[in-house]
Image 1 (cartoon, helix red, strand yellow):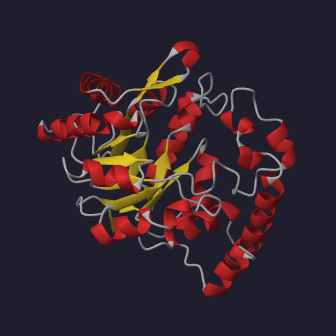
Image 2 (image 1 turned 135 degrees about the horizontal axis):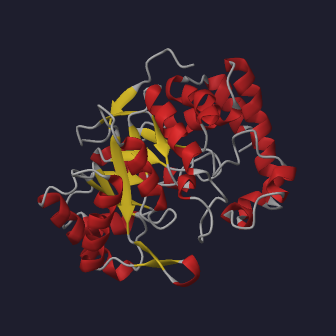
Image 3 (image 1 turned 30 degrees about the vertical axis):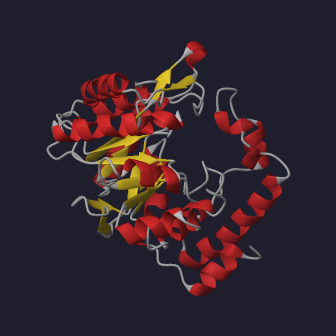
Length: 319
């Protein structure tokens, strides 16, 4: 059981003081949709959320797309009756299409409809951070961002940010309204944002919350070849290149190096992978997906884990 206080930091210039690890609710959306993680029990999800909050985690990141409303509804249930609720971050722009596949819309009316539906499912009077999920279609990002600025003006959302935007897109939309936060994918396997996105965010004091710091479970130490082969048909990771050869052997060798460092710190490889992402000075917080209360304790260590130069050399190996 966690006894030490989790470290916090201000998310950019939002005034939100967030724990360095947040609860990611992607898998909470369950299976049966294009980017589902296979079957998930709602009661397990709620128990995981409540356990993370008990240990001091003070923000949850979800999206309307996760299970097409299901994740938000589960988060809303978990928040009911809490004396003090965590910050709630969610996203818009991905809608349910035929065969429960994702379709994209950044049209104003669609965004406004999504915001009201998310507020209802989450059971909150304002969303603490509302994010454009993907900059698709590119030609509509200005219209979408204008709708986000409108929602902030109305007080329905407190802060606005984006996920998966490139530098040119960020420059375009900030002519309309300031970009308060960024949510990029960032891990030892996905490092592209180190080149220009993270330096840009740090320079402009834009808050950064990294998603998939354990590369969608690949860097947890629990993901073996056997487990990958046994993933349910409705778990999108079974079709992801990182989980297939030739990348898989390289990635599992990385996990072995994480294990060496984890042993030094009496923790687990996943916590080391998260701590590695949090070392970047641009990164304020990392989104960590928890599917059961048992997963929370070992990974929450990452919020306070300090890695040495020797640790980094071991982890990065010949990269």
